[in-house]
Image (cartoon, rainbow, N blue to C red; front, side, top):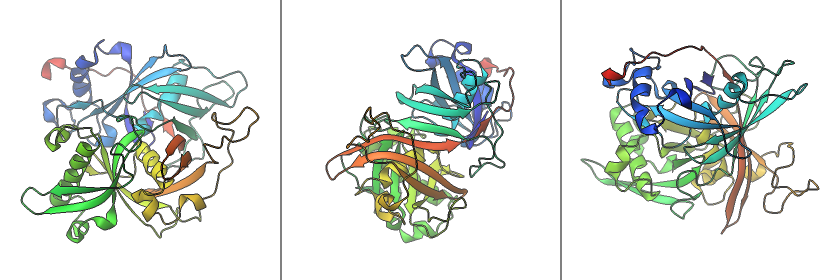
Length: 397
């Protein structure tokens, strides 16, 4: 399936070995990463981090949940699979897959269906709202467009519920809203950057772009030197977040925490006359991301609504001044429909990136001493590309 701006295999858990420890062989071989092949020529992978992904699906036995979903990032050019963290874009395909496979069913006459997904990587719940046709089937066609994907499709609303602390147990694992990350170059001096270490849907190291060294900003975004500097920052951030015991240990887990650089923007969003709140350059598996991870949008939008973060400081338009969208009452609202005083009306945060912009609806509360994020909702599109059997040769792994 193509899900959001990602592409990958959607497979049933019962078609894989019972133990997750034995999944690496089949998945590496199926995607073509065995023997460290960077082209994935002997498999169905797309030779990039955004097209070398797997969603493992099973019916859920959890109360109030429809399906369980495990995300697996299959490395490109390495014999490695990574179970840490979630992929929001791949998650947007879980609901459509579940409906198409009969794991959930739409009510007769309904125009939408809600699918409740449990992500096993982060132990978090995602609510997806899909459009269906008169037969209760997923309506793939539509006029909703997302940057990074040509064409349009039906809008899929993906709501990350209570996203804080997905891997660390805390929204701000270091206990601070802004940190100074000091990095020692391999053969050079130390340098420091300002960053917010935040864990909402996925852990991210969000760097204030203005604090990067001048010569680093002048380097080509895909140059070896520039990428090495970015990776050093990410590794130090991983240690500060408690996700790695050392920078050497952080180097072995490339997918989390993720890295993003934020800066003000003066450009206009292609979908609105409103100025984008913040511009971002995100990284995926050590390379610049062509757009922005969905979980990255959740992290950045959450940070934009909280004073004292680098995102709220560099934002062109403060989150408190952004329009409040019309929305149905939150589950946190009182029974009479009034808003709980803990969670004020939600705000729409717009984040621009190299391919366009993404809007995130955020319901959060923040004071100088307290923060809470109820949910973040983002819209995606998805479609099934093919179905069949993937042949793999485990003896080559």
